Length: 93
Image 1 (spheres, rainbow, N blue to C red):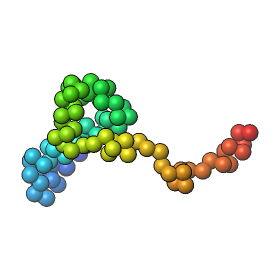
Image 2 (image 1 turned 180 degrees about the vertical axis):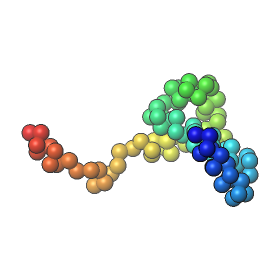
Image 3 (image 1 turned 90 degrees about the horizontal axis):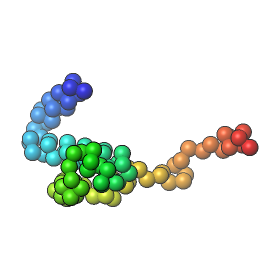
């Protein structure tokens, strides 16, 4: 993992990304990942992140991270985009 982070830091530095923007983007992605893991449950996510639920809410506001974005990550795909298992269903019957 250290190697991956080193590579990411090198690319961000080479691209001229300011430190504050890099930290903000990292925090945003990290928090969003934990929220998706707990299907948007802020209480459980806050416990894993080691912060109070109110602090998590404040941090989400600061990072402009909305629950709409979090929920979009675990929504089911539209029916016509779901894999079709009709052959498996026929075999199971």
